[in-house]
Amino acid sequence: MTGRRGDEVPLRVRVPGDVERQDRIAFNLNARQLVIVSVTGLVLYAAWTAVATVVHPVVFMVCAAPVAGTAFIVAVSRRDGISFDAWLLAAWRHRRAPRHLVPADAPIASPPAWVTTAGERVALPAPLRLPAKGFTDSGLVDLGPDGTTGLVAASTVAFGLRSAGEQNSLVAGFARWLHSLDGPAQIVVHARRVDLTYLADRYLTAAPGLAHPALEDAARGHAAFLDHLAQQRELLHRQVTVAVRSTHGPHRTALQVAEAVRALGACEVPARALDPGEAQARLAACMQPIPAPPPTPHLLTDGDDRQ
Image (tube, rainbow, N blue to C red):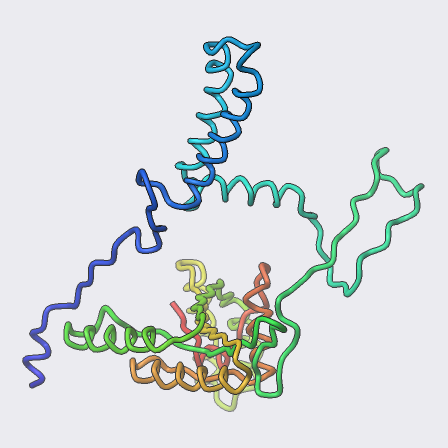
């Protein structure tokens, strides 16, 4: 039986590239594109009926062509993987959004009129509105009206070192978990550089206090090895977090967290639910653009992976 599983062909599934493509309503256009084109056409028709008696048709067509062409390009074009009209709306919102956000519960009061910088008014920071309202006693992230989210720390699997049969089993187990989801889920892989000089300094500091000279020499040799490794390679501390969300109460979210831990364990992926303290630290680490202090050796286990 084992030999037959080892002879299996790796599972290959063709996934359409347009799996999230919107339905085409008419003329190979979706509803959003039809609305843009139709509204533009109605506006141009209304403008023509209003000026038909005083403007020559050729002149009106010359003036209307750029408007119609721009509307068509906005309707059918895409940029950065999204429709062009959505991209323009996002750019407009980004342009109008404040650049400096600070934690605050209420709007920030304006400074006095005499506070200026280089003859210009000082731009006020805006309150930072985070979706997370807090943490429950069981470690769930409270999202207010959007429900609660549970965080699961997971590790990785050496998928390339498995046989074809084992790879098929892992893929099938992961697919069963995905099919069992009845709410939003997210997998976040957070990678940061590991500063080995920090560990090397710790070994050098502890070396003189060791009980035997051979242990001291071994500690110094290992510190030299870590320094050499840090110079030759860029090591990463990889952190995998699975977030599942439910709007049906904390009890339902807790059940989804337990199901995620069980399903990932069946795929040979070590996983565990995070307690309130760990969940808060993990969420802060995922949102922190500046690397935190390097982790100590005992922190590189339980859901963390090194490369």
